Length: 179
Image 1 (cartoon, one colour):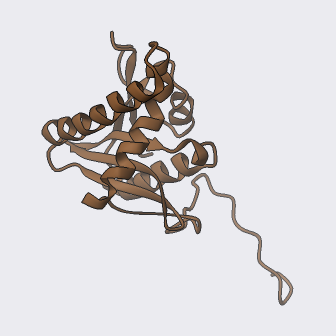
Image 2: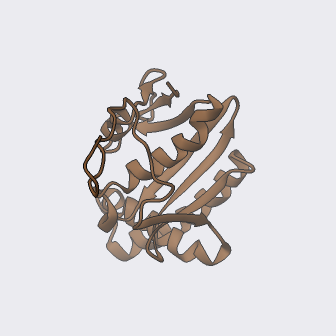
């Protein structure tokens, strides 16, 4: 028994207990007022790629603004009923998560984080929050990742496994299953 005023040792566990909410991050459902942020996020996450095609920066930004709006419409048609969640650091939007029902599980349609917030654990926190909701239901979480993308190692560390070959578009299906 620990001495008065000391904390007892924590038992070893094979699972990580997650707090309801990491103090610096939270989420909320997207609303129409978020469209400008979502457009800017899309532009930021793809600007380097489009600049590499030789577009001048102002043309690339205009092109990507239009693409962002087209993507929103396409996702609405392809994944009706999907939920779009804004990832927040304090009150500041720093990312988005789009999740659709994909019976018998769920599909991560998109997860995007602004460059300034990457590499700080927000993607891990976001996906673990999703696992905490889906795991007790015993359903898998699926996504597609760029086979050579920087997010793929993150997904693998979190327990996603490849669920098919690399497709012609360079993406690979991945799946997480609760233990």
